[in-house]
Length: 354
Image (cartoon, rainbow, N blue to C red; front, side, top):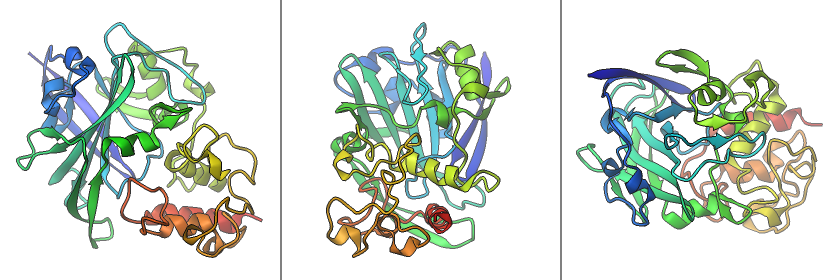
């Protein structure tokens, strides 16, 4: 007996709909998720009924973010697993409080041609965040040459990738799978490992589930994996970075929030910079307005302010986001290329600031 699963997989500015047959009763291996020793193969966790086509097992829920974190233009498939009978606790501002046993799953992939995102998709890695008794653990699984399973890579790996972009241009880069310490470098909040993406403001959008389109917050609540959430109309929400009908300031701040604020906040690893880029930050100086850097050097590019109003090319923020020099670039990990669309958005935003 089979059930049909509809997964809308969103990768930056494009999406892929996959409909696949899933064996009824396929179960997640909770014991493997809770083991202190990570599984050598991704398949041992039972998170997918068909991993090649990214079809989730029963109890694993697909989701996406309104504006995702940029990772070298990789397309991303996101899923959440909350153990049966358990619920995440809603938080209006931070990542939800997920119960022990929760697993956040993110697969990175590249279609051969971004103009046809559902064809010839090369899966690169699947990253797991597993909430165990002692806290969250991160494990990266690199897919084997036959693309049938993911293999644990604690030390990370570098893989050449190539694709044709939406404009028809050939692109390539060396995609970097992070090591465990690099994962901790970004996922730190008040000195504890924590998820970044699953916050109310990032999830508050419609998703095409098997039974019909529904708001993700409402669906999680009705599915019994989230408690305490208000009606989605009363929950915070950021605009998509490419939604030109939305307020420019809000789009730019949302982009900085998801791409930078996990470090650049009072509770984050970059707290000593004094540059705080969270969505709720209302101090213009704190998010860079005519703010001098705490430390000068190559990272400043010789410029005076993090954000020079009306002059993006004289803003340190743009200088660092445009760089691929390891000693200059921001973020420090997670990319080897420049996010041109993100840079253009922030340039437009800085040009509008007086």
